Amino acid sequence: MSKSKLQRWMRRDAAAALLFLAPSVMGFGIFYAIPFLLGIYESFTDRTMGGAFVGLDNYKELLDSGSFRKAAGHTLLFTAAGVPLLIVLSLGLAMLLNRSLYVRNGLRTAFIIPLVVPVASIVMIWQIFFDWNGTLNAWLHAMGKERVDWLQSDWSMGIIVMMYVWKNIGYNMILFLAGLQSIPKDYYETARIEGAGRLRQLFGITLVYLTPTMFFVVLISIINSFKVFRETYLLAGDYPYDRIYMLQHFMNNMFFSLDMQKLTAAATLMVGCIVLLVSGMLRVERRFREDME
Image (tube, rainbow, N blue to C red; front, side):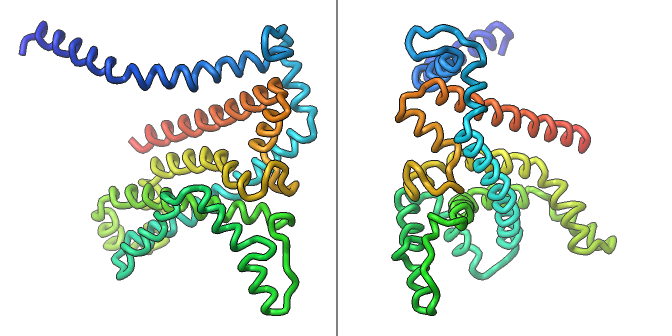
């Protein structure tokens, strides 16, 4: 094929691709990009329509808010507790199911099921188990113990973490399984011949070659930890127990009170923090990949 024919073919192919992408790009711009940019602009004004530019005043007022600081602290605590636990458990399960087990296919299916269950059904299951008149309290009552209002106690954060892990462990397990199966088995055979034990193989081979997958899984887990609002909202309502009052609750309440300046400022800060975190992790992952090469 001559160069001119190749260029004409590429232009025709690019035009067709743009034609098919146009509806999605337009939908993304209209329903996501433009509202988000307008929200950032509104965070620097004193009112929603035709407001005057006030600089960082909304952000200063937001940071002085006790409710915002409490919500941000609880969100960071939830992420710091839930993400490492999810990574460790999903990696352990992936390493277990990467071996030849009799019930391996059944276990894989069992851990993937929460991914396809609707959020409302998940919340209903946890409500049945942790409600005042739920299954767990019925067991405690049968053993002569006092009932506990789990969602109105300091146990509430642990319950939300457990629900987050239960819902996302299957997805992370699949990603880790794909990463484990991409590691050549010759590496392990060579390590065994040279006398390396299982612990040495874990840190010298498995975790090293699983690092790119690990970075991706950590990023996805962090992003998913900021999406736990639906479950928490349906489980505990608008104003839940103080321990599980998170950023999403704060922004939801600002929306209902029509305080758009605090809402947009809080959303912009949260997105900015996520972008900085993701950019930092991608930079570390890129440097690690260059060192490996």
